Image 1 (cartoon, helix red, strand yellow):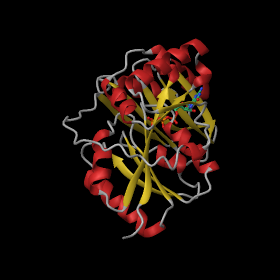
Image 2 (cartoon, protein in one colour; image 1 turned 60 degrees about the vertical axis):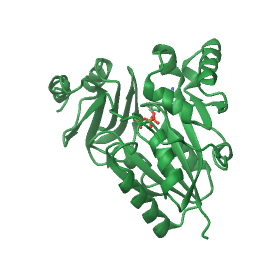
Image 3 (tube, protein in one colour; image 1 turned 90 degrees about the horizontal axis):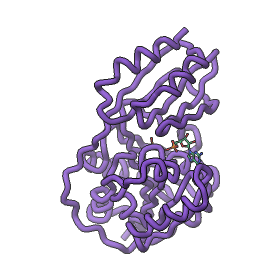
Length: 293
Ligand SMILES: Nc1nc2c(ncn2[C@@H]2O[C@H](COP(=O)(O)OP(=O)(O)OP(=O)(O)O)[C@@H](O)[C@H]2O)c(=O)[nH]1
């Protein structure tokens, strides 16, 4: 029988640092990695962030691999194995995904891969600012073999200890590693050899978040856009690319904190994610449009 290719699932809440971790892995891990991404939102941003880094990618589109895309997922795994023969496969789930159905499906139905491990990112900053752990986040923590307690730069030592205690109470067996911007020795993430068998999931998962996208050929006024970002209180997560004065930046917004990073990309395209967002969509877009020049 052919050797099964190790597959690693990366999960964790919206904006916790999954794509940042992937960028770090691609810079530091010497093996041939193939990446499957499942994004929430109609415009695929993460795929574009990772593209061009000499890696084979497959994008599972804007749905949730945990519920509706299992057939598509299996086909994508088979295709990536046939075309690139990777040493390792990494799946980045959406932040709203509960990984149990995915883990079950990988173990039950995907005979060409072996689930090596589940890595769950935990957002230290969000855990301090929003201490109640929601259902999806709890499922992500429970599924983990390794938990990366990320964004340690944004919280105090005593807060970190309290979060670690909480994580340990939800998952006694996972290894917890503190990270800043996902910087961890990749050898600690691969070769876990998970043995825990996932029972069949029972729930019907309905993401409570909504999203919308916005594309524009315009140049944006930077100061106006920064004021817009400061006022995005109805949105939990926003990401994408924005053009100021002929230069494009990667925009990342998580729970009120935001960053801009110079990035090579074609045009402005942004995704906004939040609860009950459809009610606020037109107001958010009209505020954004005032920054077009
Ligand atoms: N201060 C700080 N910021 C971080 C750290 N890790 C990630 N970030 C920032 O957090 C934001 C979100 O990071 P991403 O890696 O895009 O998060 P994600 O989990 O892939 O997001 P989704 O795919 O939308 O769920 C970006 O602005 C990152 O630069 C960290 O350790 N410290």
